[in-house]
Image: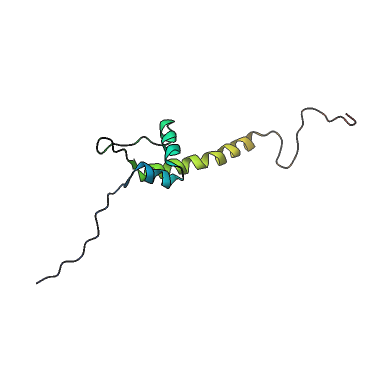
Length: 99
């Protein structure tokens, strides 16, 4: 008689997270997580059942990754717009001694 191989538990291809799990995944408290969702800084939930909001884990991670990259991109853009060359100081108003 052949023996049955143990099977791994079923896991969805795109895991769904509760609000508490989603907040933990992005490093926020649950109220702050809901505020970010309301302000559309985080993706809107899907509802597999009434009163059961869930978020796709990959969407939350992608949003947070993109959001954390924004300050570095903004800083690089500001540096590119600065007048003059790197390492030199450019002043539009001359300095006056003794004032």
